Image (cartoon, rainbow, N blue to C red; front, side, top):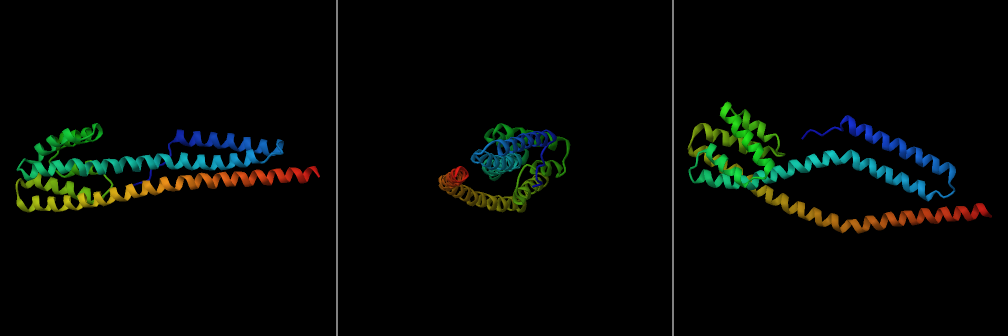
Length: 214
């Protein structure tokens, strides 16, 4: 997936926050004998920059991941309709009832595009919201089924491809669960580490004050 770039407004906001933050840090370093606060501000400014820069891309990736996961979930129903002999177009219509509002809107757009264009283009356009090549291959196989009708070879091809991404989605869901559990375990350690850094900085600052007093 192509990485999302920051918008002009996001760059302006980031620049303003950094200018204000740097100016505040400089003033504190010049006027204050307590360096704990400006050093803390440097850390928080760095973390804030990271979050502002990475958050839009992370959100877009999460959204695409959610859509891809939903695609596998609701097209499991689609595969049931196909196995029951329902034509592709009507199977797509029936699948909409199991979709989220966003996915339902995308499926409706797909159906409208199919009404106007009988080529593979509508399916390819729909696949752009998904993050795996395998999902796109499934959509191409659906297009082939729509063209060839009930040809057994295309139905078998679809079943094989869909079972592959279904199994992969199950594995990925287990990996995501494991990652969430690991992240939860590391959060207390990260918090303790930051606390220790601030304590050390505070001690150094106090010692510096004592030495200056002597």
